Image (cartoon, rainbow, N blue to C red; front, side):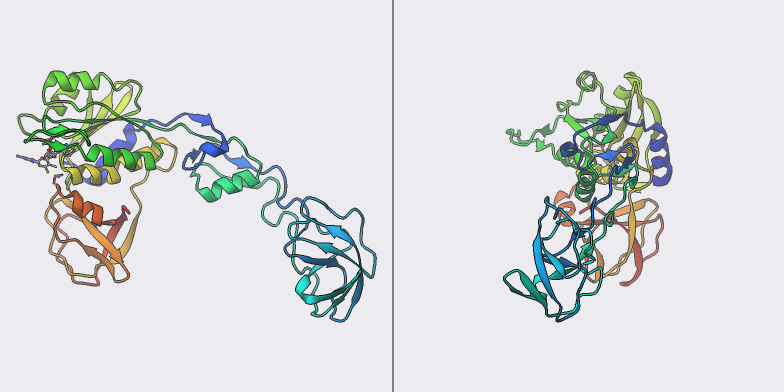
Length: 389
Ligand SMILES: Nc1nc2c(c(=O)[nH]1)N[C@H]1C(S)=C(S)[C@@H](COP(=O)(O)OP(=O)(O)OC[C@H]3O[C@@H](n4cnc5c(N)ncnc54)[C@H](O)[C@@H]3O)O[C@H]1N2
Ligand code: MOO
């Protein structure tokens, strides 16, 4: 058995890098930027009014000015201002030459073509200087997962088609005679395949394109036939059949299919019978079948691999440190990922930790990570936490 850290290192060594592709901005959210983008103009490209009011060079309370025209967003006032003049201006409009402030309309009294200032406005008031958001040449650097805010920024930079990492193609294979797909009629000894659906959702949230292959029945021939369907997948995920029972066929059949195994078994709980290697042009990760084990391994191993594939740093899932709100017992010899819930009091480890309990996983928004042989801890003691919310 190897440690979680060693397993993750071995996985990163197997991880191929996705090629880059150009996509439209509307398809770019959640994708990983593969090439820096550079602004080609200042934003705003002119000094712009931040308020509705009057552009002028005089702002003393009591000053009377003549209103000589209007500037609206998209329509500048055509000439420079002279002394004693003001221009009616609206938010977003270019500030005319000769004006150095905008007096908001609440601070003037208007009478026909004249205004009288009632509150003093210093120079610079309510003007956004040209380039105040970003200057031409400003850069958004790759790699970076594009957030909705980034998409707005790219649009503002006039980038219509960023270069991003191609989505990793993932094929997921569930194994087991006991499984039927959600919506089907299970036999008396059958259950519903669940973790493959959870994993697909998790991987898609990490930017992958996921195919769920047919459930492989517990024969060598059936599993071999489904493995033949992986096509051009970058990453093949099997679920179940990874342990030591007579019907656990993944190691044997993937071996026959040419798996060059990098490791088998990790000192963690849940998730011990994890395996990984290279299968032809693809990388393969065999996850344990217990639903929570599969999902925990998805968070701890597969999500970081998918991020690295897309060019993000090859790093473990980010952890935070929080105090526990209730005492916990000593840990055994395996690194333990315990379902937990975060509140204002800290993080609380949930009572039932059996690796079959999806209801408890669904309640949890975090995993508390216990190192091997971690001693018992009192409330208030700090622990490492991985967000899974
Ligand atoms: N003698 C030993 N037995 C077991 C060991 C061991 O070390 N010695 N390890 C245990 C651990 S830890 C785990 S984890 C499981 C993993 O076993 P497999 O990967 O071979 O998984 P299966 O036996 O196929 O299934 C386990 C369990 O999960 C259910 N399952 C499987 N696939 C799905 C799916 N897609 N959706 C929902 N549920 C699924 C399956 O019905 C079983 O109940 O082995 C222990 N045994
Ligand atoms: O490692 Mo198993 O995944 O404990 O249930």
